[in-house]
Image (cartoon, rainbow, N blue to C red; front, side):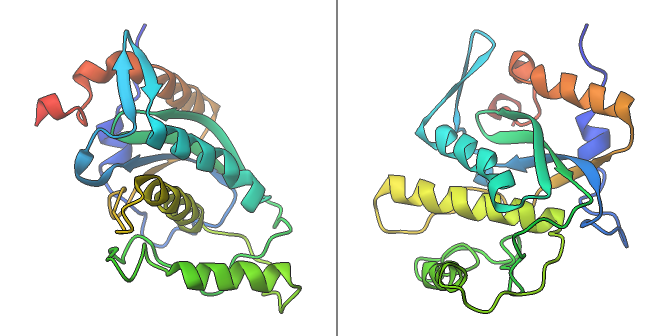
Length: 212
């Protein structure tokens, strides 16, 4: 029996809730779509997703999220040819890693050959070096959902550009992302089943290029 979870209703109606605190403890169903919906993350074969090299990088950096944000948990996750679905859970604890005070806004800054994806590699390297060398540490604070997604998008984009080897910064993700707050266990179960069943429903998926 197919899940009745409706992605149009739950992740397309609005991108952000006005006035909602996206750093508070909650579970979120997140969808991130590839730039121009290009199918570069792999392909569906006999109802199963076969990852490309880009898809393997995406899987790697999704798995890295809890290592960078100790109060963040990851749950059900699927990589599709041109988008991903996943559940991100923000826990109550603040964790041990500070969220940078100058967190880059990856969703509002388009990449160029000299600018990078919202922050230059020199800036990112400088931030990492400061923390490793015991420099001044910003106050601990819970990251927002947007900061978690921005970290994932930046790191995966950076490595995918290295794989390309051209030296030109390429945009791999759409400017924003879609989220839905998971309110209860029943809804969590529906989202789980929707994510797990996504590959078998690819022919009818609205992101499938065949429907454009």
